[in-house]
Image (cartoon, rainbow, N blue to C red):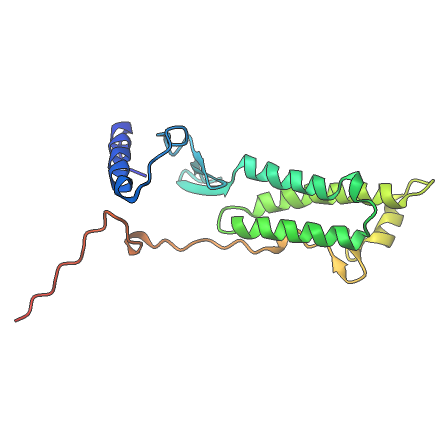
Length: 197
């Protein structure tokens, strides 16, 4: 990232290219773009973009799961709750979902992800509700009170035996501390040698 205009960013890209070349690495032209931070960009599954903080006039850089990453976990949830899994017990399905969601959420827990985790859990809850109804309803449609009594513990949390749906929201979001110049880069100047008297 640079503090400057587009030509400053393009100059830095040339510099990065020169640093990578001796290592046998190169920037992919298809994946390397120069964009303004207000436009945002996707990197390693995250969406990085500067936005105004709600209720203030201040702008901050936010790192959130990208749309593609959110869609990938929703697709995984759909796969784990598809009709072909109805031979499994509810506990098995909940266990598979908990593992998939916890793994995904642990990767994204260092971003601004709490609201996204809630939205993914809401999607998963809906899929679980449909899966449970279709597996257990038999000839008669299960009403909501019966669903709650048979398949949920406190509130509307799905559970069977000791297996409880925890979802992505069970992972605590944790922000990185700013470390600034403590992280060495190829451009970090070497410390001056101490002189001996």
